[in-house]
Amino acid sequence: MVILRTIGIVSGKGGVGKTTLVANLGVALSKFDRRVTLIDCNITTSHLGFCFGLFYYNKTLNHVLRKEANLSEATYFHFSGIKIIPASLSLEELIGVDIDQLKPSIENIEDTDIALLDAAPGFGREAMSVLSASSEVIFVTIPYMNAIADVVRGYRVVKQLGVRPLGIVLNMVRNDLHELTETEVEELTELPVIASIPFDKNVQKSLAEGVPTILYKDYSPASIAIMRLASELLGEYYSPPKARIFSRILDFLFPKKPNLLSSNNNLRLWK
Image (tube, rainbow, N blue to C red; front, side, top):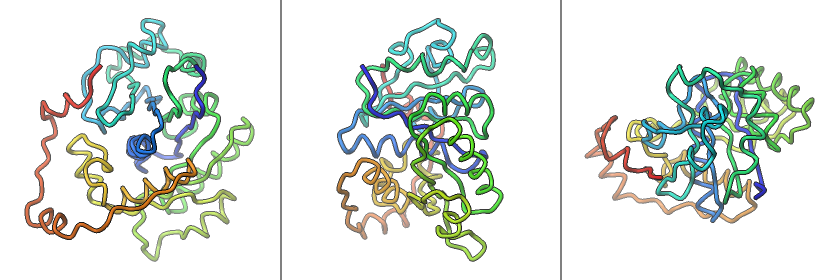
């Protein structure tokens, strides 16, 4: 079966929230009745599974690339409806992995409308394999000059490869005076800013719980911005949830304490 869209999610630097965006955007796209598969292509420092409370798995993308497993064996189903193909957490399982085989290895994903490929930060071999396997790409960055300069370099690479750039997602935006504005970013990069995700403490809280922010609090500022991004990528209508004043009062008075290694987290995914 042919995947309708393969979107690489890349960043010039680590720490800009790229993997967290992949997890939440995947869930957001699935809410519009799309079959979504998330692939952790950052095989040296894999983190995608953590966003879903997934810490232990038998087969991974590493095993697929080493021809020790097929895609279905390395695919995990989340209760939200998305599928995840994680990378291994073991350094030993990097041995014998040929990341250049990423594209042919994922071409036969079953029952998928959109595949989101979570690239390693930078534009080294791992990230280049993602760009080569993608038909479209989204740049994730923060609104500071050093991070934006990396996007400019990345855009040059994308143009050489002939991959369609969808635009830039500005993440963790606080609207401080020292941040670059959307207009400034667009002028510097010659790319459109397709979403501006506000800094939101709920993101850190949801990461601690092992649940994407959209499922943790769908009315949080970051959740609403990511849902809008998903709707625009699909050309679908989205109406943000109404303010839930009572829920927000309870959240303030009785904040949840995160349970980082709860056994319930590991039950949120199943084969």
